[in-house]
Every structure is written in C-alpha cells, then in structure tokens.
Length: 269
Image 1 (cartoon, rainbow, N blue to C red):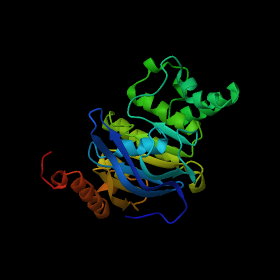
Image 2: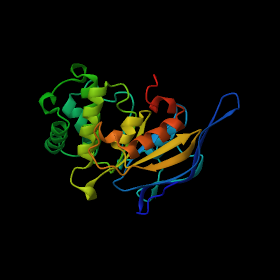
Image 3: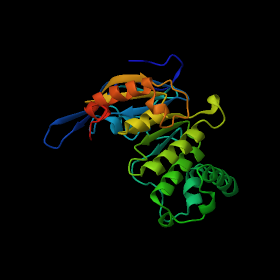
Image 4: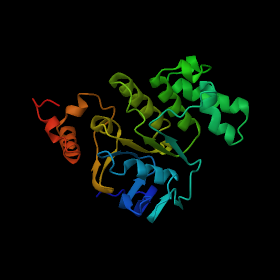
C-alpha cells in the first residue's frame, strides 16, 4: 500500500471499529486500517456496499470512536467532532427554516463571527458555487443539485482544513454531477497548492473517483486492499478517462467491485 511521504493531515494506525449487536454478536465494520493522507491531498474511498467506507469516514469525523488502533487529524488524536473537519452527508443537511445564505453562514455564526462578516463570507462561497442569485431563497425553492451546492459552499465557508464527503452526489443526474465535480475541484484548488483543503470523498462511482482523486483507496470487508495513485493531470474530461493508464485503473477498480466485465468492450451492463 502506498503511504505519502509528507507529514500526514489524517493518520490511522491499525484503526478498527466493531459494533455489538443486541443478541451478543459482533459486526466488524473496519479492521486494521493504516492510512496516511497528506495535507492538501484529495483521496477517494471506493468499495462495495457494506465494506466500511462510511464507518471509516465517520471515525475520522469523530462521530464514531475507534474500538482499536490510533486515529489523528492534524497531529492530534480524534476525540469527537471539531471545527477542523467539515462533513457533507449523502442526504441533504440544510436547515429548511433558514435561507441559503444563512445555512452557509451557520457554522461561522456558531463560532461567534459577526453578522456582516459571516454573510459576506457566505455570499462569496455561494457565488463560487453559482448560487449567488438565490442567496435569499428557502431550501424548498431549490433543486437537489442546488442543495448540494449549498452543502459544498457551507463546508468551504466554515474554514475546515479537512473535508469529509460521503457520497454527496450519488443521487444526482450525470450532468449535474459533472458540474459539481468542477465546482468542488475549483474550490479545492483555490489559492494554490499551499491553501488546498485535505479531502476524503467516499463514492461507489468509479468514474467519479478517477475524475476527482489524487489517490483512490479501495476497501473490502473493512480493510484497505488497494491504494492507487492517479497521476493524470486535471481537468479530467471524458477523453482523459479513456487514456490507457486511466482505463487500467478503471479495470482494477471494477475488478475489486466484482464488475470487471462492465469494462470489456461490447459487454452490456
């Protein structure tokens, strides 16, 4: 498994998580995961359903405590949720009683930032995700894609250095998803390499992982089974995904997912 040489922003050493059932049984969700993610790195986590991807992300977020091993962010042990980590879940997490701009500004409000300043920051990030014209709209007035843009704007506006995204675009159509990939990467690259946030992005979508990631970590049965460096330059359009090295990555990922036949020419899904 590849381990980054630069100091890790996220570090796991033999980390595991076991759930105990009411009948006395055990479910091993994550086991013996050792992984280092460098500051500014964009890592996608791929694997079949039930392999432990979301559990791993929740452990890093501080929403679940590891039952084995060590886990740190920014050199400090994770003891619970914190403002250094922003999370985007699969389901929409906006407050329906707040307008879009107030949703984006909510984290800054909780940290005591003044109204004028927090609304200025929120407005800047709403502009960045293409929603400046609906800053005063209620969530019920926005489409699913717009709500995801609000969620992305929110985690960037809050200033967290680590962003954890759990299949945030899974329910969106292809075109909207591609547009949001561009938005996310543009915000991630904002300010140059030194200012990049560290991102862990869970997905079932192989093409999504190949489009976004510096590295793709593959999980199965609670373990990391592959760590793939993706060195293709960005932006990665459809033609870029057809280059030989990207096709080879895709075959490997599909094989891990038990879907390699879908990558063979002339094979129907």
